[in-house]
Structures are given as structure tokens and as C-alpha cells.
Image (tube, rainbow, N blue to C red; front, side):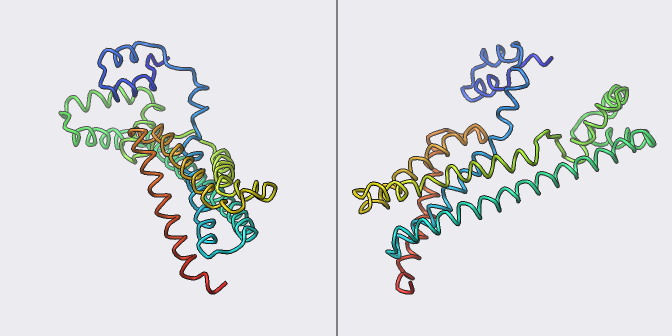
Length: 261
């Protein structure tokens, strides 16, 4: 069992707390299921960001062209479903391709370790020498590693090919992307949906939708620090600004081309 809590180690590094780092490395690591729960956070965050930004761009473009709320809903939901499915399929295919490539390379490395171990040992010694390790030490390290074929293959995958194994599910990634895209992409449309039942909102649908979208963008950017490790406020602000630029561009296009509708 690994005696380290990765989350606590990251927090200790962020605050440069040496005592906390020592405590993190002496504590029993969190159970495996906590890693599973965070497995799809990348797909959730980036699917959500794409969903809310692209959908609000549609809303802003239609608002800039001064078209009806009905057009906003039609184009918004069309984007929500079509683009969400497209992103999910893309995520599935890319994740599946990565897994297949990883499996093929692992099979090749395992075959080489079994049938031509001397050549693989030589490669690994050269890799370690390139990192500044002396030849004698490199040969000693490789001799120890070679006693465990599975570990040997794992190390060759990383050191020779730069492939770090992943247990992510392509289908899981796709579903996480689609549902995140759909849920967060619905935020810019929420005000327009509610306005169909609450007439008082109709005159201010776009400003309210913009405010909700801005707040959600900031929140998503802040959550993104779980992946990037950046400061949550500046990450949220960065995401808010990027979304605002996208929306402003779409609104401007709507204003310029509104006469064609």
C-alpha cells in the first residue's frame, strides 16, 4: 500500500508547507474509490466549459440580431444536442484510440522484454545515462528492474515511449462529456425557458442569461484548478474573460448581420 496522500501532498506543495508534506507522505493514501470519483473531472470541466460557452455564443448572436426568443431556444437547443453528441463521440473515439495505442505498444514491449531482453536492458541503460546517471549505476538499476518483467514493461512504456497508463473508460469519458455539456450548456437557455412562463422576464432575458452564464463560467474556472493547480480566483476570472470575449464576438456578428434575418 502506498503511504502517501496525493491530495494532501499537492496542498502542501501549494502552500510550501514542509511539515504538511512530511505528514502527507507518512499518511496512508486515500482509498482507491476516491481516485475513481475524480477520474472523469477533466471531461466534466471541459465538457461543461465548451457547452456553456458555445451555447451562450448562440444566444448572444441571436440577441445581437434582435431575433425572437423562440429563435434563441431553437438554435440553442439544437446546438446543445448536436454539439454535445459530437463532443461525446470525439471524446470516446480519442480515448479509445489512446487505449488501443497503449495496449499495442505494451504488447510490443512485453514481447521484446521476453524475446530480446539484452536489447531492452541496453535501451534502458542508455535512457538512464542520458538523464545523467553513471553507467555503473544505470546497469545496477536495470539489473534490479529486470527481475520483475511487469515493472520492467511499465518503466519502458514511460521512459522509452512517454506513455503513462490510464484506466479511464472511453464510454465513461463520453458520457461525462455529454452530460456536462448538456447541463452547463442549458444555463444560458434557462432564463429564456423560464420567461415563457414568467412574462416579466422577457424584456430582460438576455441580461439575466448573461449574468447567470458569467457566474457559472467563473465557478467552472475556479473548479478547473483541480486539474491545473492554479489560483482559483485567477482561473475563474480567466475563464470568465474568455467566455465574455467569445460572447462579445458572437453578439457583434449578430448586430452586423441582423439585417439579413
